[in-house]
Figure 1: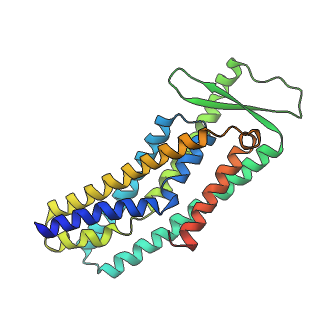
Figure 2 (figure 1 turned 120 degrees about the vertical axis):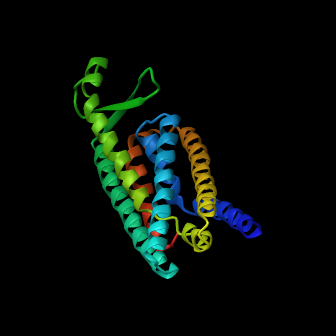
Figure 3 (figure 1 turned 135 degrees about the vertical axis):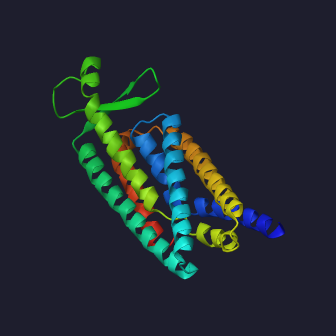
Length: 244
């Protein structure tokens, strides 16, 4: 029982540390939530969904590794490959998003915010180089399917990246109770690690989202998508090059 308590405390501590030192765990949701005009509750919803997928994917890898008789070194090697794929995928997604945002800002587009009754915020833009009037409410509603498709592409790309992203500290923690065939031990360790990891992600995203919302700079509003893409690119590169 004392060894299990040590594992649970270690799982909580590593879940907290693993999340805080990994900017890829929270920066994507902060910058995309603000750039896409998501309300805080939608940003936190996708933070939770992606965080849960992030933890469960490593639990599945650990369970399969134990079932197949893999050594710890082999599972860590496999997790390393997943981490490399996730890091470069995030960097690539950020680079594409940055290029699109830069092109959009360079064309002189101005963003108009359209808030729906359910709290969802849609952004609609017009080009200052043209004399066409800003879209009416009816036009905005008519254009909504394009916005929905873009939103789906963004969130599901982020979801896939988090499925690929491993929780490296979790695998060694699961090996100990798994070696003694303790199902409840494995479940408790995974649960504690997951709860702490996801809770830390959501608290950090909330603080960052509210802090970023306090900035009111016209340049930032015009190039908000480019800045979000640059942040995603930086987070992916930091994950890869600095091992965060």
